[in-house]
Length: 285
Length: 319
Image 1 (cartoon, rainbow over the protein chains, first blue to last red):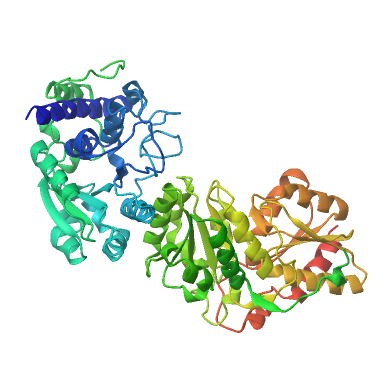
Image 2 (image 1 turned 60 degrees about the vertical axis):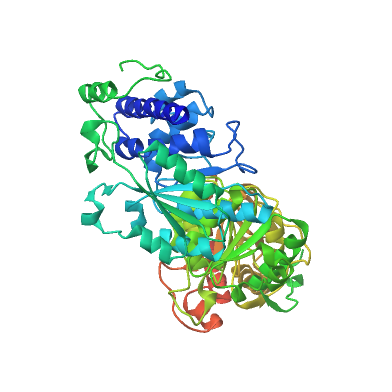
């Protein structure tokens, strides 16, 4: 329990970082970032074997890809606290000459990023390629990739969904952020994607479900998935989350998909999130 | 070198040169991996596939995913050779190439067969004439369009030792083989095929042979052609182009591509900045192709030997 508490405290700080990054740049995507905070904290601080010294090839390491690249604020914060770069750099998010681009890229050599993402639908294919390389190299570590539920509307997702089981990539773990929201509204209204679990199962994946905002459940599910015997089938976890989780007025709506809070809203949000590891220094917030 | 000494030793497809190159690099580079999208037979690389079945990835008819898988393989230090028809290797997956490969600096080699009109009977749906332009616009992308079997094989060998994303364009039909066997190809270095003083002809891909035929004919008419075989369109060998036009004062570019965006455009960009020079384009004239036999297609769309000769006569008058 003490460990879960510790992870939750990291998550609280990451959520503060998200609000402060987006507030400072007055742009970015807080909703999905807040919803996926618990997952990324669990992966980087508990589940994955990884090296903050950063090796592009990820040999002998577990590797994480973010396909829905717009939730970069959560990834940047988690990478910084995991030691990939100094948390003080978070204040440069989306600024000119920053390594912290609006969407993650390799172009500025930010440690932790292995491919540009944000043009949706591409991350699972790239993750599958690295998973395949690990198989070729006899490297038994896993490749995780997070993708959005609205992103499931991209055709390339389903090409990758065919590719994984055909190539027996049981070292590939796709996690779908099932928050039910996308830019233009609920996924049910924009273009229905349900039933995601049944769809991925029909494509030959082992499907798991978890509450992505319950740290205990996230840890238990991920531990079960990585420890289960490899059977040739890749894994898809349909992860229910609340968009905007942790900030009451951002929860459960697509309104905060790509919108920055004003000063009053930012202060309100930060008042709901405990500072646990120390805020990165920044003027005005 | 006398232009009349350049002779074909017979016909072989540039795609067969690709296959020979794959066989060669398969032996020398353990990290070379070949991917294809249901076009294994068309790529003529069975020697590689049979020798290294564990390094061949059949991706099915799913080119977008194939580009992403290649990016992932490259991340792990593999050298993925992604193969399909030029049409599906570029236009169909432009964003995947742009984001996951070019912008992400992945060492992926996009190996595209059946480029241009010489795909022949399948028609315009499969005859891409815009691919050089698309690939050339991507920052950091190397673009190579070799002229015959031997040069294509050499291009494959050169590319696996070249770090960074690259587009290798070759074709379907049997085509005269006239460059040296077992040559080394230096990326970005144009080759002088003949020295001349009246006009520069700079050609790429299949059209190099048409340029050779035209230069022979022109020589008989007393026109001295400075003939350059340029396999690398990006980075462009500007020095070679400028040195040539400083001798001749006019230039004809030849390519199996739309006149917009390809070799002709690249040369015009160079000349307009450094040495404004009259230029004529042997290229398709902003059009799609159609079904037909290779020879007849080249004639109809202005890519024949007589079209090169006509372009030379036109540009000579503009000097």
